[in-house]
Image 1: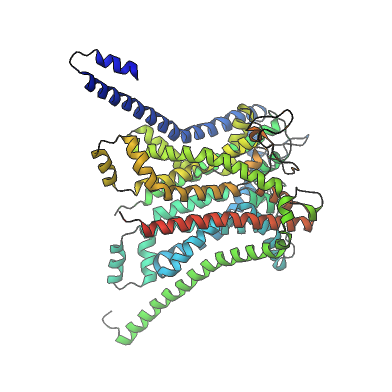
Image 2: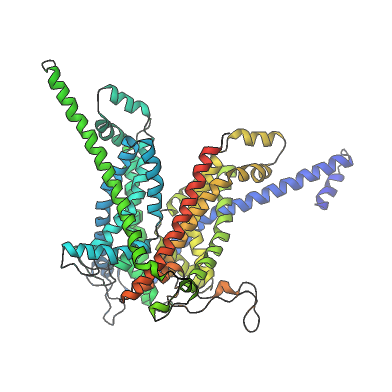
Length: 317
Length: 307
């Protein structure tokens, strides 16, 4: 700071007090810049995380694909990477992920949408004030607890109606996962519906439409781009959900489209490998990164799809 | 239309209005599905696990004998991991949000950061585990330690903290900033003395919700290789032989509450399932009370602040 002051005092036009003030202003400026740089670095951490995720997944998967041809990875119908006769058919894990997600979404999307429409268009103020925090709490329950619930309460309950159901199955895991996803779908959809301007509802009521007709034919189409975003969020949650499936759907790889069978998902496989003790750098270790990359690409695909849907149906008011 | 009688029109109206009632009922039923699930989950765990909730349950290590097993190493591990997570995620998230709201120029760099934060919130949590396994555990050599787990969960909740902080900052009216600038305050003085103090309740809400999420996260912590059976505690500061440093516990192996519950759930014996229920009860009460606190703070905030 003193060196800054001395350069200013060389200026013959400035007297001492002004130069001192200028020096102070200069140091103030430097401090401001310094703080700004630090804040910028903090904000860049999120970018670094994304770059890190992509770099790690691609680098380890690259190693993996040196050993396993991409064609085998996509077409093989067995997934036995830890056996002597190793097969690496990702379809096996993908089928588990897709079936369980489908079960979950067939619960979460209808119920979440109905709850959103109800809360946004029908519910009296007091019910909405109670229901919103409750749904938030429902979304805050740890997924391992849902897994426990699926394995030890829902599966036995389902076995009561369907005696042949195995102890591990995609159905009960998917159903519980659907309940877990409801809050994500309903809260984002409801926000989209509440953003629809009141004048549109008033116009509809003025034409003699009932509440139900207004909700279904005016508000829902107008909010559709936001509702689509909610569905995409739900799909991403379902595809990436881990613990419910690892606990309740079993960890046996099984190429199946039948939800009543046990099957491992991509995420459950990663957990299974991580629980064991695979040496760093082995092919088994690399498989979880290839599986993780598949998972990332799958969520990316859904997000791009959602983005396109949003574009297609976006309406500005 | 013209050839309908008044009675017919009335009947039509009644018919359409009936749908209102039907849908309202369906809406309440849909909500009830959530309520019932939650109630049965909580009641079921309470019936199965409540009798295990003795003081010894909190002071015993896990054991092969289910009736002697406890969650000491799990809750200590969770506490330590959460400390690392909070110390990392809160400053990083708040600083990043302050930059985006107060400093960032409108250019492509800012756009990239913003899009990134939104996208990160949608990345499956287990992918963060893979990142941490490759980066923290092996590249940085932190090993399968409390430090690795804390940092992983910090990255995971970073978007939550950033979004909450940004919302809190955005709700502060421009006159506050203009007043500070008019008195000659710099940008940082304005931020540190006015913007941040006023947004603390909003930031707190986001931090609590993020931490509640981090406590319950299992998958990323398993992926970096947390152990499932630990019968010792991380070293206390300046303990051990020879007496070691203040932060040795950062590099200790550990387990956390959800992993302990997972371990007990995946055992076949019913006695261990009761332990899992008890651990789940503790976990749910912890996360729910944190969430409830966040909701309460937000509620108070909405009622009290009038600019």
